[in-house]
Image (cartoon, rainbow, N blue to C red; front, side, top):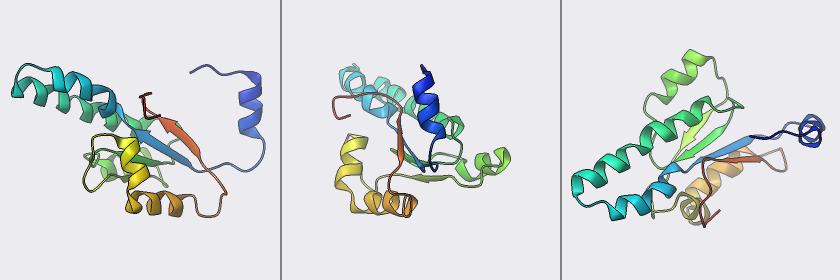
Length: 134
């Protein structure tokens, strides 16, 4: 990530906004998954998503809401071990195939994000990767 004086100054002015992280590595893997020659290959590529989405716990800032395709395994244990006091992991009930579309279309995810940001008037958005939907 490239930082400039203006981005550093901007982030230090005013109240800190809550952070929402869209751990959407799966969205870039989907095209590869669909082209894989066998079901085993598709499953192997899909499973490579989990370590990538799980890394979102370690991204700064540590206090954040993480939206992932599925639950991050060991989330409670890892956040407790790291001393993270304000972190939460949410995921769509039934993924449509794009994590951003899931966020836009899921009332439950929207409600969770709204509650996370309740009194702040906004939030800082971190995305894992850029896709046509972003």
